[in-house]
Length: 337
Image 1 (tube, rainbow, N blue to C red):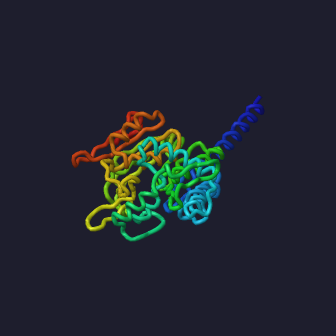
Image 2: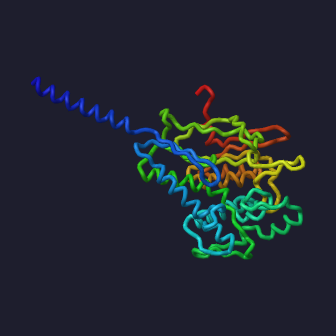
Image 3: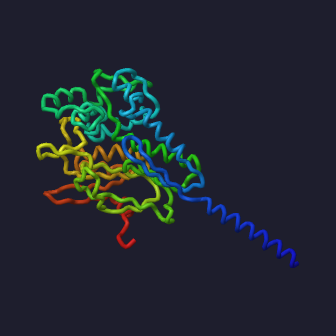
């Protein structure tokens, strides 16, 4: 009988040691680097280093949608060297059409000629005058491009596309999908401020994600937070005109260009953060659109979509105000927490 007890104890000890060793191998990994002209920070719970696969997932977007990659699908289309698209391009195109319709044409990926003219794109030119802007506006409009099968058809050769307002979100989604395909259930993927996450952080609690206060700071030296969210799923993207802008003759020119006027956006919305349960690509596109359509229209679209929540920081009679959708309010972390 004593021998049996000894054997049982030995077996239990072996199980406990094996479990302890297994626990030690399950650690949170970090992957960092540069991509799409910005930086990425990825944290995930896994005993494996998955960084090589993460890079492959991100590279798919670069190959398809980067204007800074001369051999990408979108670059060749912009130069009229090809009309052939790939699956990622078509995925982006269809969402861009949807957001274009819902924003009344304010969100438009054919805005590339204007973005370049204002110095925020791949091409840099002289500061544009009104005649130059009026000329370029003729090349802008989603109605000027059509997807026919695998081919993109342009009405005019000068039409060019800029997918930067949606591509980072797609990259985040692809990395998240790759991690989940490797069995990862706890991760946070962040590329240039666009985020998708699941599960818990290394502190064994929901991921804590900050929304910055929109204070003009082109050098990114100020990181004051408006609020902190506690999230265990979904995606968050933020768009604002307080980082990417320049001052000329005492006037601010921001990187978000209105496709109808041809000029940088003048809106009461200072920062738009969109939470989506569907994808970061969707959150990315709508956050950009909300910067152009203004507070009331953005609020209406958020309230009408059960798969989307939002935080809009806007100016009203010279006062900074914050609006949070009902679904997102429950995710705001109180200070004492």
